[in-house]
Length: 488
Image (tube, rainbow, N blue to C red):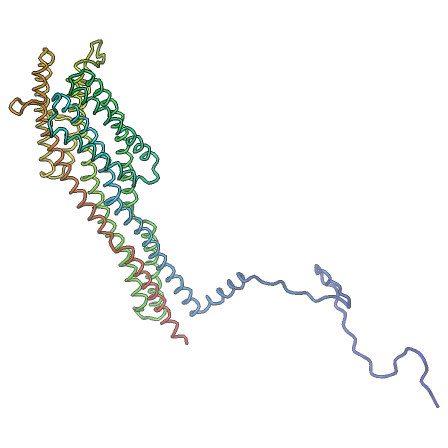
């Protein structure tokens, strides 16, 4: 037998194909080696963002994809317009409501506190001059003023919020008010007994009242600043909403123009509805806020400004009357040097307050300013009446001072608090106070009407803007959807 030879040689047969060798490429790094040879290269993983961008770019190369993008942008713009318009007009409407129902009433209450305290001080000095038996009407007036001041302070304290300046002024007034009333009661008790100590107590009470009036004036200023801040929040134009609305309208017009050029169809009902809804919101926004702004500006220019001047005038007249009374109470006990000549302190303050009040020919005092701010005859009439009575008051005061300077104290007293047939200054003061009260009531009504008109012009605008924006966005989507259905 013949056996194949031993060894590792392969038996004869067809030869296996030989793999072609690939020469190394320039710049290529060798593949990493594995346990059985080089590993194949693994492509890097792409992020979701890059994949989304690629898909969006791919979609934008087709008309249906472009339409979907346009529809989404239009809906977003219209919704953003409605959201911003709702937000801005809600803030302005709330500020206008605060002007009418919160800050202006609080400012009025602060003015009432100021006026009530000054009037109480005047009534107390008038009662003191009347002697041991004070007239019942004077006592009633004093007690009413103190009660009014206490009630208004309680209201102001409940509504002062987090304002530290207002809270400090209110706390100071609450502390000093019982101290003042205690001094007045001591002055009355001593006056009934005919003791001169009563005059000293009354002067101490008057000094205490001046400190209280400073705190009341600070509270009045703080509340006026809060009122001014509410006006500043209510009156600016909603520029952000107006800008986005104009942009949304421009985009809608462009989309319709594009649709016309590509399909030769004049109208797309959905896009027309969205344009109409956006145009209505923008027009409502512009007209409504313009009317509201005009009403609020009018309420400030012909209401708040007049009220502030009239309140200042009334307080000046009350202070002047109190100092006129205190001139007779002190009888030169307190003086100031004017050009090396001693002058009665209270008479000097009376002169200063009457000068501030005005009333003389060509005067630019508070009454002259109030007359210039009154915008109709009904508002000017009580101010003109006050001016005439201030002139009469000054003339009567000169006569009273003449009597006192000549040593006729009883004659001076009659010229200040005497009977009506003796032409006392008390009558002139009452006429001035009544005229200013009538002017304040009229201007308060004018403010209220104008502020209500301003606030009412914004009624329904925030809700209406939101509803119309949602409808407009839905109409834009439906309009684009109608075009997309043509490709199916």
